[in-house]
Image 1 (cartoon, helix red, strand yellow):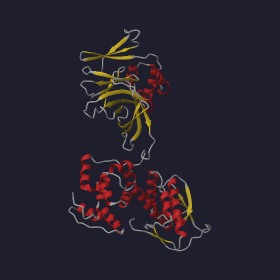
Image 2: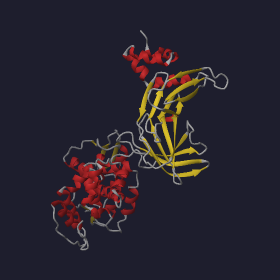
Image 3: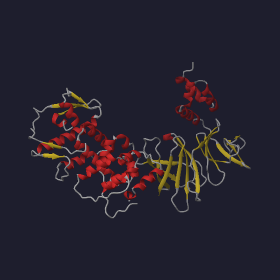
Image 4: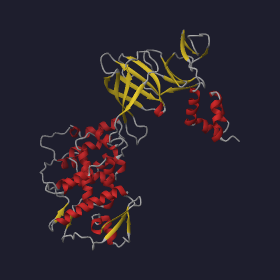
Length: 179
Length: 323
């Protein structure tokens, strides 16, 4: 997952939907979502299922609830659209270009409560959607910057399993990191 | 046979001692009577009776004797005497609620041991109360109360030092949590503290609330009533443990995006993170990630396998000297 990915748009996408293939995704709580196959294939996991011919009518996603799946689909649609509207070009998800029109949209997209954010991360990981995984992980990383370990524990409800002595040892190892 | 469901209300009319004794009739009765719902119903029934009682503690030489008076003003001879749970202890009454009496062992200045005593069934429980954290001299005033919304009995103590903030300590019997108060604010005749209790279980988070006491209480007052004002729930309430919820590869992914100083610091968050970050595989991944960035680094080699990897990655400035 550490390698960078690029998505190459070869042709301009037709705005009309009549000829586009659809696929149905089913969430863990039984809700069905019909989406364009090309949107669904933003997920490498789904892409492999389709390409392996295992899709049939519905693709069950037992690890994703409907609430999260609808958001993920929203993300994929938006990013697929944006990629389609640009000139035939190479869109790199690792680019830090500030002229990326999706940056603002992405920022708004991740303004959710912490539990939803974690669920989005898990979904992006399971569905192998690099852009979404990068976005959500970066969001969490930004929340962590500048915090002390205790603040990290409090924000993310992590149990401290160090004894005070053990913790003092670890802090001593890299004293300068705590300044 | 006695059907517990319909007829258990008969038990509510019996004296407490009998009810307790009947727990050994059979297992069904045992669980019925031991149930807190039954206890609450029993209490509610007792509270319907009109007679209030006055409890006096009387010290004779080195012993304490308690007497229960129905109306001392009118008839001072109508009382029953009973002895405290432990003969040798010099007890003081902290307060009484619902027939439970809170006693403190008042030997010496520091109140070390608190007890909860139910004289009608002669059961005593010592409270796990950590006492008086500071040995400094202070006015300490304990109180005993009952918090109906959470069905908890609480012993509270206010400590006032000379001209500093007062401190509150509370021990709740049911949940054995310990509450610390700080940052007091005085408003409308009451003192308020921002307090926090410790989570009951591992998954729970600390719960914040505002605790307030009326300043009208004097030292030596018993039955101090306090109020809890809930504060708006922050996002951190009911949160999931990130370290348990997210798989290791995801946490790694997140950490790879952080500045080196943060990453090293976060080794002391928990042991899982320590081994994750200290792993050479992580170090290599971090290095690979950093190499994608364009900024130059200064590389230093240093003793120790672990430290060497990290110091290569972090690109310490030439001014750094080892600790």
